[in-house]
Amino acid sequence: MSPRKILAMLMLIALPAVASAKDKALTVYGGYRDGGRFTDVDSGERLELQGSGTGSLTLDIGIDKSRQYQIFLSHQRTDLSLKGASSAGGDAIGMSVSYLHIGGTYFWEGDVAKGPYVVGGIGATFFHPSGSYDDELRASGNLGFGYQLPLNNTFALRFEARGYATLVNSSGGLFCSGGCVISVRGDMITQGELMLGLSTRF
Image (cartoon, rainbow, N blue to C red; front, side, top):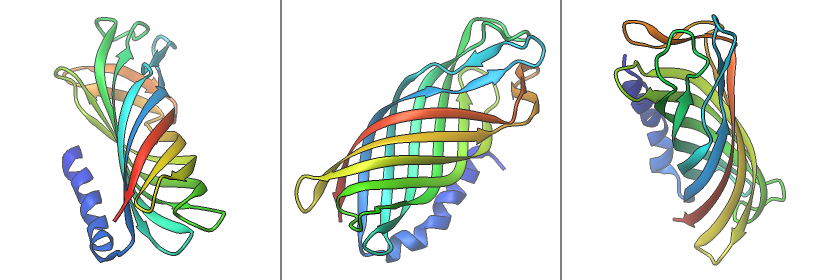
């Protein structure tokens, strides 16, 4: 099954909850994401994803006055540095990194419309390198904190920071196409992101 089909299945799982919910909010974010390091097995060098801007979208579905389910989609267009990769040609390749997670938010002061909250979710990370290299789909999760500032009864600003962790093979090839770009050592790739969002309730 292709990575795109798996991502589509995750969205279909959440559709019944979306259709039946009465209290929903849609948030569009702009942000900046940094981090993400692979270790080349042969050279021992660290290969880094460059920091860059991101775009994200969340759909929050009310559970009670302080909790929401959340569907989270985030996309980053960046470059993977290959200067230390023993098996790669060139200095870098373009890379898209997308997260699709299902989780929730908790406003610990008791009102989903305002104040501080904690957010988290689990799902998948989709790595899409440019050129003829293979895509990779890996399990991942996120955890973050934020603050929602109401502008009126419909719109609000969200200030948010999230950390991401993606599981990878402890020793094996990634982005293979007749030969692997990198052979990695390690179990996890982490990234951090700062985000500013505009939220609307409906």
